[in-house]
Image (cartoon, rainbow, N blue to C red; front, side, top):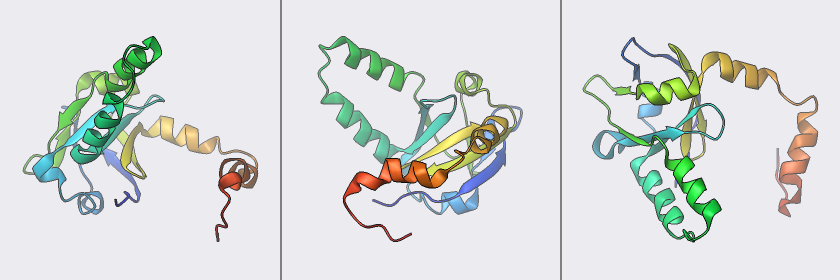
Length: 154
């Protein structure tokens, strides 16, 4: 599986349409044929998946024990607002207004590639989060990655 790469600043038009950057479109050639899926992120942002990746996630969710209340709640919240996106002839996608409102997204957005998904942030919210970088990023890296039991050359 390939992973998305890059960070892109974009603009939404008054209808909520965004031109998908050419550098990102090249990384997802199947998007024109299969489409994309957007849903709410865990923080106040949106997440875009390829249709294939979304189907994998749905397969994983379908294996969870739906007799457990926490599982049902998680599935309900995770899939809330999930919407299919398709690229129009001009290479644009139309985001649902309800999802844009949820994420507080106006006209300026940042697309942040995160492995198998693309996070869509209001530019102000993204900048605020990135400005809040831990004082010692090396310590955070050790906490998160140090116990992997393998050597990483960085």
